[in-house]
Length: 138
Image: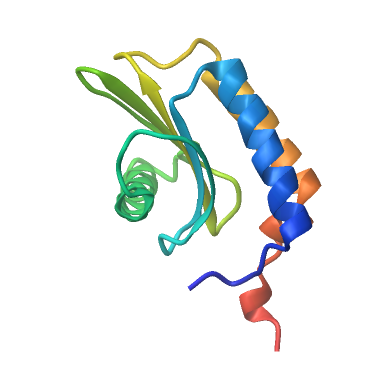
C-alpha cells in the first residue's frame, strides 16, 4: 500500500509533466507507480491494465538491483527491455516510486537517460512528498 497521498492539485501537475514528457520522447505509455503496484498517474495507452505492468516492473527493477549488489555493489539506475515491437524503460523516482515508459519499436530513444532524469527532477520538484518516506513517521 502506498505510503503517501497525492492531492488533486499535485495529480494535475504530475499529469501535465508526464503529458509533456510523453510528447517530447514519443512514448506510447508512461506510468508513475508505487513499488506495491499502485498506479499514481498514467498517460497514453497500450491497451492493457497497468497494475500487472507496475508489479512486474517493480520485481524486475528489484531483481536488477540485486544483480548490482552481486557485482560488487553496482548501483543500477534503470532497467530496459527491447522486444520485437516495443521497448521498455524502468527507472526509480524515489525509493518507493518507479517510472515505466513504453515505446514503439525495438530501440529506446537516444538520450533517454537524460530526458528521464529531467522528468524525475521535475516530478520531485512538483510533488516533494515523492521523496519523503512517511511510512516511518509515528
